[in-house]
Length: 295
Image 1 (cartoon, one colour):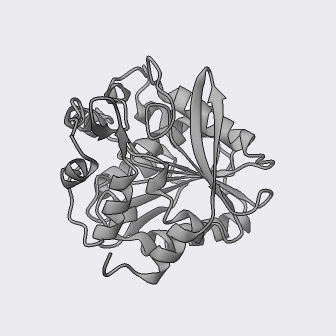
Image 2 (image 1 turned 90 degrees about the vertical axis):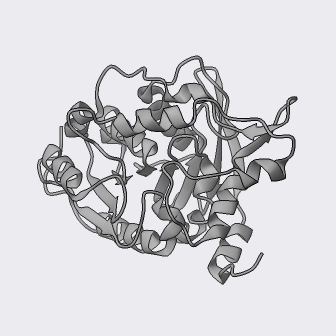
């Protein structure tokens, strides 16, 4: 592999542990880095993604933190369910933290659909969280899940390929975007594949995009019970007006941070800028008190 930076090689060679916990009868696979007992981060991937979307960033965050990245049910190496309500995914997030021995409130970091999961967790379990960082998860009006539904249509009928190589040649980001860091796209693509009796296909369950949650996310966001930070990609799905709407829903009590020159999959095209922004937010939260408790 050419043009791969040193930081990526070191990150993907960093040791981590794979573990699993059963949540309501479904095995949930997760990865962990860093020292248990340190302040904890739980990283939550987007739709049709998996824990390894974080595995090249987690070692950068594990300096002083216990970092966990899970495969939500229906994704990656976790089991499948008959239905995927967002509140169940939130329960999986919290159970993984408990199973990993997290003894004090963790910070959740969620991208895209994973951001919606973190919003749900912050509403239900907010008193057990130190905060939630939401990465380019658009809460719109009047239909906040239009993009999530459109993405579900894009993933409705995943193909099966004779070889892994053939499958990887067809891998694409949804929504599509430019990305100069091909080594990062290749990394997440490689971990997206699974072998079945019929051939090679993507690990996610297409049923994860069916809607089972009666409450719209714009109704849940104002009910979060921990501090929240909103990250928007400059060219992503959270446009300035959507960011302002989310800011208002949070009673103007959350930073809205723009990652410059980033598209929706900001960890792929601007990974180090994202790391720097996360480190800054975490450093502030470790040494400050929320302006106003929510709830």
